[in-house]
Structure formats: C-alpha cells, structure tokens
Image (tube, helix red, strand yellow):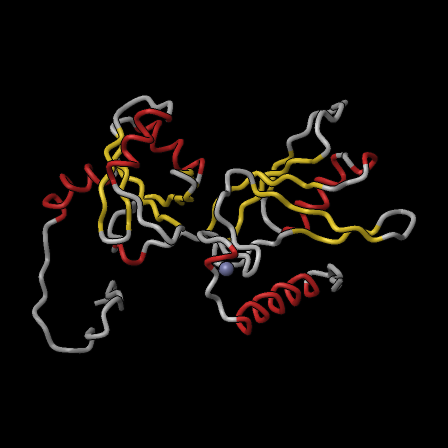
Amino acid sequence: MNNRRNNSTNINRAAPLAEIESHRVQGSGAYWQQCVYGYLMDYRSLSVQSISSFINTRWRKRGHIEVFKMNDLYVFKCSDDEDKREMLAMTKACFDGALMVFSPWWPNQVPQTVRFRRAKFWIRICGLPCEYLNSHMAKTTGEMLGMPYEIDWEPNFVPRNDYLRICVMINLGEPLIPGFFLKLDDDAIIWIQLRYEHLFKYCTRCGRIGHKYTRCTRHEDLINLDVDHKMMEYLSRGIPTMEA
Ligand SMILES: [Zn+2]
C-alpha cells in the first residue's frame, strides 16, 4: 500500500479494496483533460447561465467553452486547447464584478482538494512624484511585494500616466496590501496607493477579496493578527515597516 493517500478519516478501518483498470478511466480522463476549475471569490454565487452568456458575448475564444458547477466549483470545459491554456495563463477573470480564479485539472485529483492559491494582478502604483515614475521604482515595488512580477515599461518610455504598472502574482490566502510608505530624497515620507486592476470587490477594512467594507464580518483581532503577520514577514526580509 505504498501509494495509499490519507484523504479519509476512516483510512485505518478494515474495508474492501476496489480497483479499476487504467483503461476504464482513460475515456473520462480525456474529457476532464479539457477542463479548468474555477472558484468564485465573492459573497454571491453566479449562475452557470450568466457566466456562459458572459463568456459567449465578451470573450474572444477559439472553440466552445461549456460551463457547469460541481458544488462550489465551476468547471470550464474547453473544446480548444488554446482557450484552456489562455484561461490558466490569465489565472483569473471577472464576471459581473466578481473575481473567478482558475486552477488546472490533474489526473487523480479529488475536486475538494483543488486549491486556488495565487492569481496574477496588474497593479497601479499611484501617488508618486514625477521623478519617481521610472523602472527602478517599479522594480523596487515588485521586489517589495515579494512575488514574480512584470513591469509595464519600455526603454526611453515617456510616462503617459501619473502611475506605474506592475504585474504581480498575489497570494490569495493573504490580505491585499493597500499601499506603502515611501521615503523621498528630501526625507519626507508619503503614502503610495496600490490599485488592483479589474478587482472590483476588495475590502479596505480586512484586505480580503470578495466583499466590500460595508459587508465585512472579519473580527478586529483577526485583522490585527493578519497585519502583524504581514509586517513580521517584511521585517524578516529586511524591509522596514512603519505606522502612520
Ligand atoms: Zn473585510
């Protein structure tokens, strides 16, 4: 029983052992191979019909994408492999103001154990003095956020906006950071606001995705714990923190 996976609390009980020959699951495996899992990070539940009609009218896709639901999980079955690859590369999508995060299907994976850990966000770094609108500032912010990033920047670029843009892989299990303090070269300290593009429901009280401030039910102690944990993490990476 070397391959025994402990995904049941009754694993130590005596019970019959069933086995299905590999070729008996390959047919349905081919079906699931076309699928992407989706998890809606919102206090609402959207109907399969509304998501399907959104995809059919708004998405540029190569084939047909069929949507269905398994308990809390949405499943997107893509007839064209390129559509599937694109969804997984996007990591997330927005339906009617609600954030849906994607995860790939894997053989032998139990749906309840699918995890939606990270999603890619474009972030605007707002409130910078003009001379700070440069690639060094974008790079520093990306490194501070601590995850893989991409910068919307070209050499000899003339800024057209009063903000910088970076792409960051966000850990969905943690509260989002609303911004950071920046020490200028005259020693003044200013607040820099981060704006997450295409994120319409984000709580400015607890930092979590899926609800707004007015619907926040997270206990004050837990919010403080989240903040302490995050600040400890910055300090452990040698990044100073401060409180206003
Ligand atoms: Zn909240």
